[in-house]
Length: 87
Image 1: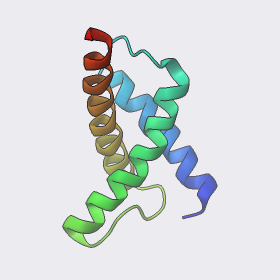
Image 2: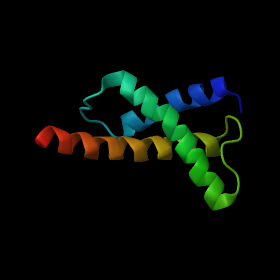
Image 3: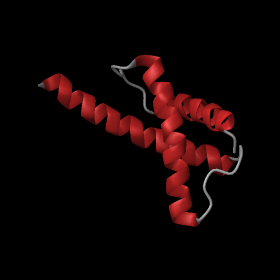
């Protein structure tokens, strides 16, 4: 998959992850988009480690992996920023 396709898939995954995990994020839309892009990479890595096939183009499996990765990163981001704000 090309870098541009990874970015587009990440943006889609970030939007879906944000819709599935609503809430107020300190970073806004830009941070959510970056989390989606990195989440696509994380989801592909997890999928590759578990099944041996990561993100292979725009398929349901690829989008699912990217969304799971983005949700995981969004959850971690919320945990880390919540603790920083409390101190």
